[in-house]
Length: 603
Image: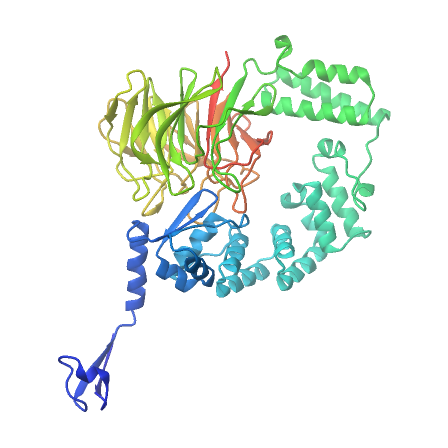
């Protein structure tokens, strides 16, 4: 604070104000340099409480709220949108924009602070480019140049090439050319598609050079069974891939050996789903490279097809049902099912309406899908009911108010609906629906409000894991024991997680992915009820997954979809607790996040 004694100048307009005095008399000018900061802090608190917010930005099923005055003053792009739209609701249609990056920029306009990291720099850079927030854009570019490494140069390079960042792009090209022998050992390179490999070679301009040969040979030898079966007919690429040996004895002997190892593993404890996928890859390879009919028959006989149960690897099959969610462009009403026996996804009946951010439970062959968000500033109170036998949706009972971001868990014939968001506040409420009678009751309220948490039953108790509220993303875990009238706390997560996926196997609870307020997470952790301790999983998923679908089948944790920070995943991974590792599975037909994934076991 500062004050300064001055004299009111002759002719000053302030001289006519009551109590100011005549020109020439002493006066004090009072200045508080903290006032602007206090002003923005107060407005940010109002924003977090959803108070006086008169602008909603909708993007990929997510809604970001704020005050027109603040947002328009900090972004020329938002200023133009506000001028052309006086309804207070703006749908952002740029599919490359990331909702979390936009929310970070909005928060920056209130706090003047944000964190740039490897996991968000590309999303922030693009969003700040669109929003014309030049200083943040320059800071992102500076960060990329300073943090170049063999692990991040490929995503940086592709981003710069696609968005015309020539200065940073030139640095990436120079770095990649000088470190090609190290880059080709990185997962970001080895997991590239053949299209990305071609783009990488073209962007570096290394066709017909030794570096191209190094790159293509390393790529083709990684996961070689799958890639030898691919048709890589792109000029300048396929000639560097070691050709399949076709009918040569050495190649067939190798396939025979691998086949017998896998068939033997049927009785040796290898995870059934992993074995199934590996046998399918061998089947593809032999048909692409060999005419040996005896070998074809051997693999076919040991590859379960759902008809010959005597040779089935999986003793019973399950269906994993994916319900609604957000896609790259909008909220969806589509649903699909994965058959663990055939290892295939297929479309099923659509929801009665588009929705994401709902929660679901299975009871007597019916899935109850609770509430949700429509993507048009509307939340749903309806409970949709899916008949898994007849592939049909009907309308069930309704919630007392429209909610999204709830978590639901089944306890006998009752659905506990926990927390959620009503468009104005995060909730502590717990509602209990008796499915058989249709009657509602109030359950014990949570200790803290939480939406986008996940709840499960473990040893007869209900666990509410993570989530978010006005204080941020939560690491806390609350437990409702059988017969209890109050929630208690168990050990917190090692990492705060909103929108995680959870699953229970044995006496252990798995929390997978989510968002910690800065990063989309590829990590997971497991809770042991006997020790009340969380332990990080040994390995990470191959992609980040915020808002994934997670369910348990055949003793494994199936994790599908989710947001990876730049887009929405369609792939699925399986965590095998016995082996302590992740394995790849089959892609969904539609990329989706904020959806429910429910296991329905076939007897």
